[in-house]
Image 1 (cartoon, rainbow, N blue to C red):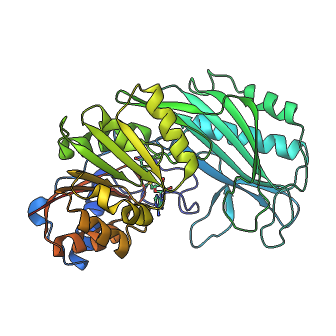
Image 2: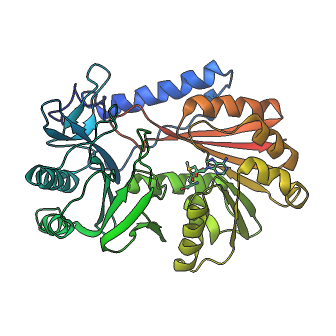
Amino acid sequence: MKICRHFNYCGGCNLQDTSYREQLELKTKLIKERADKNGVDIKRRFKKILSSPVKYNYRNKMEFTFYAEEDGGLCLGLHGNKQNRRVIELKECLIAGPEVINILKAALMFARDNNLKGYHRYRRKGYLRYLIIRKSVSKKELMVILVTTSQGRFKKEEYIKKLLSLSESKNEGYKITGIYHIINDSAADAVNFEKEKLLYGKEFIEEKVGRITYRIYNQSFFQTNSRCLKVLYESAKKLLKPSKKDKVLDLFCGAGGIGLYIAKSVSEVTGIEINSQAIKKAHENMRINSIKNMNFINADVRLSLKDNKEEFRGKFNKVIIDPPRAGISRKVFERLIELNIPKVLYISCNPESLFDNIRLFIKAGYKLKVVQPVDMFPHTMHVETIVLMESG
Ligand SMILES: C[S@@+](CC[C@H](N)C(=O)[O-])C[C@H]1O[C@@H](n2cnc3c(N)ncnc32)[C@H](O)[C@@H]1O
């Protein structure tokens, strides 16, 4: 068992001092409790949690925050835990990996050497806000995204040179293939891509999961554990039992994710997604993978299910639901029930909203077939769960 030096202070992962076997037990217990709380009986349907093939250095996206110290100093890292709200300057991170920490250190050194000021979110003053690092494990590519306000400037050439001077050999074979500068003046404590500029390299990194290549752009949603994503998608595919006759509805499809993974095994996939950029990327992912049987609707799922009610009724025999943490709303649920789709595969990162939703499907006559958790997030209490239901 490895324990990082920031454990007990950092809010990043709080199960490091628990053996991996116990972590899986804790997540199993959590899922059973949430199901119980919602009156969903999963005893005979529960499958043993699938572990992550990598326990460390698994995160493919890290978002670090710059912090302006009272004495004018600058810090860059992750927010501390509940007892300790300030930002922890990270010297290491066991779930991000040394190549990511090397970039963090280089960016911080550059900022300090150039006397750049951190953003103070209560005073709404200062310059540096976030540093986001994304990586692809299969191609060993890194994307570095610096987010600032418009209250300053930095020497771009020097910054790029500093980052690129991190040699591949010291960076575990990873190389920086894209550097972005984002301007974000909004008061919200969240990354907002108001203005973006690619300072160096290409706009995307590419990740291969099974036979599918995914292009990941600076704002793309992509599951955070690339190596375990194959476990998740393979397990979902096995449960879905795709056949060449299947017409699949893929709700909350993002940039194609799971839909792309199963497309070649079915007749057609229709994805619905609210984010227009994600839809653009979904088309691109389709093209680079020579997939021809997907179509996408850029809309709110709730409205799209209403607007396409006549066309959708009786069309699909399988539906994949992969919503944000909040799960699906009553309206979405009611509109889905009207479509009478025989097989429902629900993928969720939030057991609370998942079983609240599953309870409704069961009440409407669906039978619970399989509950399959996947540990996408070692050393944290987060867990992904796949649920298979069938009507009648
Ligand atoms: C968990 S991600 C799913 C990603 C995708 N299924 C995959 O395999 O990568 C949830 C997605 O739901 C989208 N979303 C959120 N609210 C939505 C809504 N009301 N209608 C349609 N899409 C929505 C988000 O933009 C995001 O891409």
